[in-house]
Length: 197
Ligand code: HEC
Image (cartoon, rainbow, N blue to C red; front, side, top):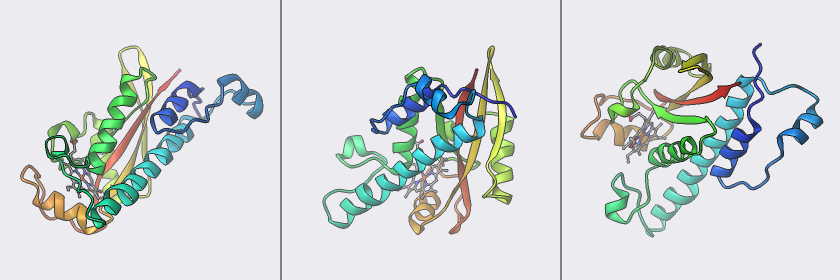
């Protein structure tokens, strides 16, 4: 299996993006584990775990909670409406910030029937990956991507219609090309890309 010293830097950055302040140094982590690196599958799974936890927390404890209490609502046009951003926007925006940081880590929400074309699959790996997730939602799709002279590892995890809100909003959205999502459908995926050394 190909191994990568996941730039602990990258992991640290992802962690920092999400506001956790415990950051081990690359050398001390290596000394402790005695290994030459973390397999990319694992590194991607770690990043995914953090993204997932933060998205869940933002959805349940911020958006849903404040909406239920009547404090504020979440809206796609949150900037104009003094509202909270949607969880999908939270993920896309934090992915953009992480990418700007220069660590090479990237992540975004993609779909075969995207509300916005920018969220459509950007490669064969992403397109075939989303197709395969429709059949096997529990089996993340992985592959190697070349960009310029650099190699990246990409993992795509399924994104399921876990609540009625997901399908109501997407089925009813003016720009949605698909209007018959059902509960538990695979609506898309979270694509995570990490640089290989
Ligand atoms: C109130 C509306 C709304 C709700 C609720 C909602 N979404 Fe979305 N979703 C959006 C919008 C708007 C985007 C595009 C965000 C962007 O990139 O700016 C989006 C993007 C996505 C994408 C990327 C592909 C695309 O359509 O652009 C996926 C996958 C997705 N949502 C899945 C979900 C899932 C799963 C849920 C429920 C857990 C959910 N959405 C709930 C509005 C919503």
